[in-house]
Amino acid sequence: MLSWGVLEHGGRMKAARVRDDARAAVRWGADYLLKAATQTPGALYVGVGDPDADHRCWERPEDMDTPRTVYAVSASAPGSDVAGEMAAALAAASMVFRAADRAYSRRLLAAARDVMELVVRHQGKYSDFVGGDISAYYQSYSGYKDELLWGSAWLLWATKNSSYLSYLYSLGDNDSVDMFSWDNKLAGARVLLSRAQSPGEQGQESRAVQAAGRGFFCRILRDSPSSTTQYTLGGLMHKSGYTNLQYVTSASFLLTTYAKYMAVSKHTFSCQSLPVTARSLRALAKQQVDYILGVNPKGMSYMVNFGARWPQRIHHRASSLPSVAAHPAHIGCQEGFQSYFYSSGANPNVHTGAVVGGPDEHDEFPDDRADYARSEPTTYTNAPLVGCLAYLAGTYRS
Image (cartoon, one colour):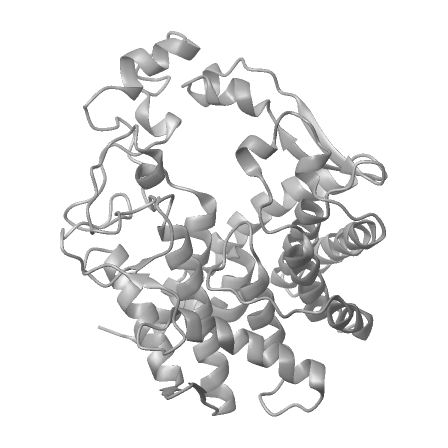
């Protein structure tokens, strides 16, 4: 998602002199995934650390002493969901560096191709095979078809190889979705495919893909007759009681990105009786992002250290525990809970830029470290917001 933001809105990042920072962040993640995908032939490393042991402790990274168990998928233990996601990430990153570092870009794309080949040849849900009770924490609830589509869509863009398009069509794609998340990639894959296809492109499969992509927006637009999305009184999309802002930032990214496509191609569509334009999609995205940054009933920004009022007790171990410089002595697994997790004090380390799970369906936010559903920041909440902010910053100038 961070790569997609750079690819779509990198020009606006360049104007703000932050594109190099975004590329550096992409490389940091891509380096890790490249190593995970190429370290051992036929195996993809997809997790480090026993999830049960890790969740039983509240420790600083420097003090962690829980088992560093390594989990992998392979032909005999398939994981099409996590591997399809890895292929997508590697392919996306390869395009970010195509002009800036061609040799690195080629390595990333070669790895993406190899990973996708493994995905297609050996299919299965990773949480059924990798062990460690992964399914209790990171279950692939949507299955793996969405990641097959997602990985193929990214490789189609990165390679222009029509075999990926043929494979996409062979999968079929008729499921209705009203969210885009770390688990379900269907909406993202459809919007990504729309990028490569003009609105009037002929062909039954092409028209079906375009209709499915537009169907997502019809299910999230507030005034759409086919909307399945709830909104709070303050105007925030509400999809889940667990890290709701992840769905808001990802939907907002798709709104801005599809609005860009619509503006370039000068087309509109309708959700039954509701006409939809690039302007209406862009307006909804702006309203959601404004809410996240403080235009809401509580007057609170849900991005740490942005605005006048923001979360002080986020559910994040390194933020909530004192630094090694301030407290050189080792802090044990349970001591972290007793002395810091349950403390009512503000976190000593300010995690600038982190976006938390956000308010509940009543626009309320308790700012409670123990309330991980609302107070935990995640990469899958922050990553889509980067491109979204770049787009909006370039569109709405103060």
